[in-house]
Image (cartoon, rainbow, N blue to C red; front, top):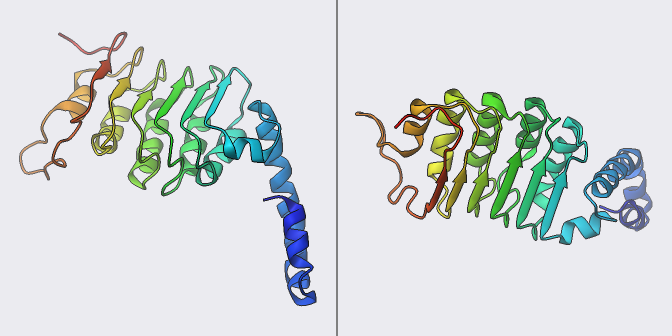
Length: 217
């Protein structure tokens, strides 16, 4: 939200202006932080980011705070279809902050999410699972988690959320240390006594990359 809009709105009445005056410094600070993130991502303004269909970050030094802010902005990026984050220096804290910022219906139009080189880890994968379970990324078709340090625990946590994505066509898990246990959670039938998965689970999946994992023959 442009601070100027809020100031103009507050001028409508003295009462409204008085009640919102204390919020303006925080609004200004939030807007400045969002603008700085836009510039890091290669967009000249918040408006340009809001209308963008593709956002790609290649080694731009995004911090945990940057990714957390990007997550919270997910609900106001209705046009975004492709999000690529290649940040080898980022830690699992960064991924958790990003996922924790995503809420219901966040990034509603994103069909391709590529998180490569970030140390997602099991904690980051679990946080992403929570976000997906809350309704984030409802149209996701392709998910790439390349070299993201996801083990069996992380994939077991993430698998149920992925199995419920109706449009999922591609999963790229190259160079992650999970093994048969993690893969079984994604593709095997549920154990006896467990609730069955939704009808047509992973029905549209066409690509599953497992190179560099510990999955056996």
